[in-house]
Every structure is written in C-alpha cells, then in structure tokens.
Length: 95
Length: 277
Picture 1: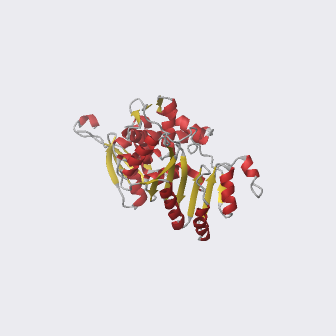
Picture 2: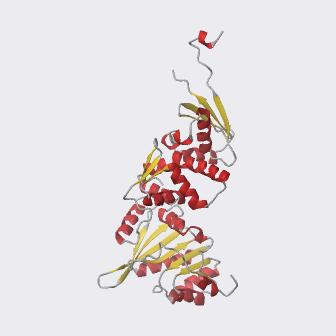
C-alpha cells in the first residue's frame, strides 16, 4: 500500500530541531532554524521585525530564562516554538 | 521610553545604526549585502575569510530582520524587503548641526516631550549656579569639557576641591593650553586632558558649545553661547537628569569610550606630561 492509495491522509509534517548556541540570540536561532527548515536564504525570509519585535523575544529569554519558558508563534508558513535551549520548526499544513 | 521621539534618539545612539545612516548619506541607495560589507570593513578592517563570512551572516541577519525594518518604521530610511535595497531619506542628517540655535531649540522640545523632561537654564549665572550645585552633589565622578577660557572662574575652585576631597574623580578637558594650565595649577589632583572631539569644536564661529558637564554619568549640562546683534554673548544650557534621560543617553554615547579612557593625545601634549608616557 502506498500513500497514493489514501488521498485523504496528509503526510506527517517535517520537524527541525535547532540547538541554540551559547553565543547566539534566540531571535538569531529562530531565523537560522526557519531558513534551514524551509531551505530559504536569510534575506528571502520576511523580516522577523514585521512579525513581532525581536528584542521582546530576546529580553524574555534574558530576564525570565527558565527551563519552562516556551514561546510558540507562526512564521513563514511554519509553527515555531522557542525553548530555553532549542528552536523547533514544524511545517504548517494548510487545509 | 515610549514616545516616538525618544525611540528615534535611542535608535540613533546605537553606533551601528549611525554607521548605516552615515553610509546612506554618501550613497543614496545600496543593497543590504554591500551595506553589511561596508560596516564590517569600517568596524573591524580586514578579516580572514572564515571570520568575514560568519560576521557577514550575523550582520545580514540583524540588518534584515531587525535594524532596517526598525529604522524604516521610524522614518529614518526606506527598506525594500523584497529587493533587499536600502534607500536614504534626503532630509535625514545623521550628524545634526545642533549648534544652530533653531535646531537646539527643536531638539530641546523633542527631548522635553517624553516622560523625563529636560530643563533649560537661561543666562550664565543660572548655568554657573547649577553646575556648582552639581559639583557639590557629585558622589563619584565629574567630567567637564570647557571649549573656551572665558568661563573659568577661581570662585568655582572650592566646590571642585571639595568634590575631589570627597573622592570624586575629576576629569577636565580643555582645548586651550591656557585652560589646561588653569586646571593643572589650581587642581593638581584632577585629570586634565585635551579633547579630540570634532562635534564639539564647530568650525563656524558662533554659537558654540560653552561647556559640557557630566556628573556621576547621570546628569548632564550642555551650554551654548549665542551672540546678540550688539556682540554680547548669552549662555543657554540644557540639563538632562537620570541615566535614562534621552539627553544623558545621547551625550554618553557621543563621548563614548572617552569616559573610560581619554582620547588619543597629541605628541605635544604628551611631551608636557610630568612622566614618561
């Protein structure tokens, strides 16, 4: 049996897990993770600033950094979740 | 810092943002890649290929995803996100001629509109009294620049001596040999130096900066001479108080590393120091 036999079933969305480097800002990690996941050049992504203020995200992890902190948002047709040490990017399946 | 004007001041106090605006003055339209290359060349000079690539990637990311959209939103430039092209706004000057009284007043109004207003002192007496109070209240550092000799007054020496006795670091910058001699003679414990600040010594004659006093890095007085038609000079000064006051932020940024180590000093000046440099 192949996928073509089941036209209603969507394939599992691909997920990229990106580890945030010690010298890296969370927003830098978000951009690099989404660029890698979608195979898009940094400059071809929509500026993160147009989605939300990157400083706010960096400040959140600077000042309230706990292992439970977790922020999820939608960016470049992906669902992006930022944790304390990593960024998870998942392709959103449009219905 | 909520007001729009304060946001612009904050943006412009960032040295990389200022570099972007300066590059755009010379070249009206530029690709983001060329802009990044120029900034790296200016800030770090030659780099090895690997270091250059990594620095370029980091800078492109910060320019495209944060700095340029932010500067665009503030109206300081235009950034085309699709073509990655940056265009300057012709009326923006990265280096405002703020010794022009009209600009000075406008700047004052803008700085006063925020949550932490600046105050204006009219007349030499008022400025003198205020700076004297500052000297009395300083707890750790007094940083002064006197571009000209005419404001020096032996009456202000006791306040300066008292501050030094309290353990306040006293730094006096003066362009003229005469002014430096005055400080060296009267305040032997003060650090006396020759400032190399182009923005402070404007080529035009009048009006000019009369004095700049920064106390404990949180209160600043910037005085300006204006000359009346009959040739008499009037001093007006702007005062900013508090570490987050826009004027204080601006002056600290303009003075930059000079607050921690003084400028390059001319050979002539170094030769006159009483010790081996």
